[in-house]
Image 1 (tube, helix red, strand yellow):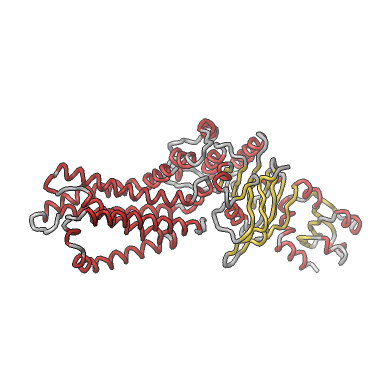
Image 2: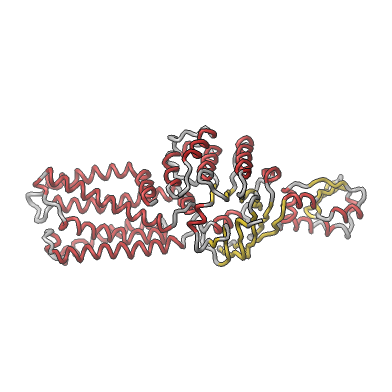
Length: 214
Length: 292
């Protein structure tokens, strides 16, 4: 059942997904080619993180814009044997699927272009934490307040955070930035991501169960 | 006769509108028309009984099962048809079908293909390119392809041309002929119900005004036409929806015998469902009272 709901999101956003996949392919290579000699941290990997984060944000906006375009379609699905929980969980799985595809693309790139850096758990888990933070906050706000509010709220929030980024980088453990992360920290980050996603999904289901479907 | 749907004391409030103590019961084997003017509460009632909008209080049972605890089992046995725009327009008919079909255990692909052929629908066409009538036929094909035992339709004939409306009514008759089923059909186009409905439920300002068999309503109500001079204080309370011109008056009554005794020269004609609906809703009653 969930597979068809995920497929529906894919069909509604495939044009944007192709665009983001192309950017995910070329941007790390481009950044690596431009600044790899001068950068203190693996430039390709940072570009991959940035691109994965913004790809998911962009597709989030597109997917919910489509839902806002067809508000009665969600009501129709809920009148079928789908539960509201199914609809919410399929969204989480869809976006986690995009994260996995981004990881796969970058992993293949690191195999083809060895100078790009390596790709393993040290890279995949911090990105999962960043993606979980985005989904964990975005989706409950979306299900509680709707598309328009969430779109502007997150646009301004991300602009605001970009000013905080230098401060954040100053205080982050240096091993996190150089991707020399200890297994203990990796495990902690992974568990944090799973916990955040589970709590966020529970909150989203709670909000969506109370929603008035038009 | 077994009840397919029982609604008891359903309440739901919005800022400017509320459903108040909605109660009715629909028997198996009946096509029930849910009538009322625009904004009377038909769609809100349907959405609330389908749990698309949370209720404040009340009990909703389909096939004897409680909607609060057995929603998925109940929805397996329901077919729903909302008016035109309840699909993702960018998907093709086949893609939307795959989405709907995967939610049902008893999906019948052969039946679905048969309906597509009968309605001349191209499965590879995008939904947004369909006309309103074609979209309604597609919605019916989806609703009828999983052996639904009860069909819930919200304003299915609104905005359709007479030919498509006639086809839709024929399909509903065929569906009922298979036996043990029911249809609950909201509409403000009451002429569709003249031919089709067995039972009528009238809602006005969020309250159920009546639930009654169509034939007994049509038997009881009459249109009265007569001379204005005959309108005395004794007969006015028996008349609803009274309108007067220089040539005479027209009204609706459910006391035909009394009227005949009081006004032997008055002409009594069979009333339509629309006449009955208008005389029962608040606007109609106010209009009648203003004749005093």
